[in-house]
Image (cartoon, rainbow, N blue to C red; front, side):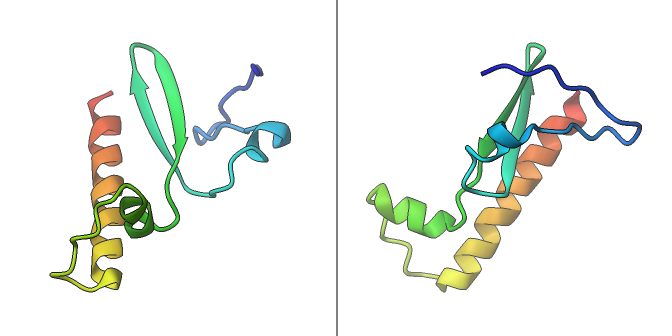
Amino acid sequence: MEKIVSFDKQGRIYIPEEIRKSFLNKTLVISFSNEILCLKPMEDDPIEALAKLGKTKLKVKSIHQLKKEARKTIEDDAEKKLRRY
């Protein structure tokens, strides 16, 4: 599906409802490369996502601490990538 959208004065993009409905998560990771903007849904529970992949040996820290660190890492990485452009 393709739609034509534009930025407002604050740099926000309106994502049409029919596209927004396809995202179950409300938090998205944005990436930009070679003039292509990509939005990917972020897992609501990164630890649960790792467990599904079979990586269940994260017993050193609490689940709460692991979630907090995972979200921080994802946000920091996304912010660093955006600063490059």
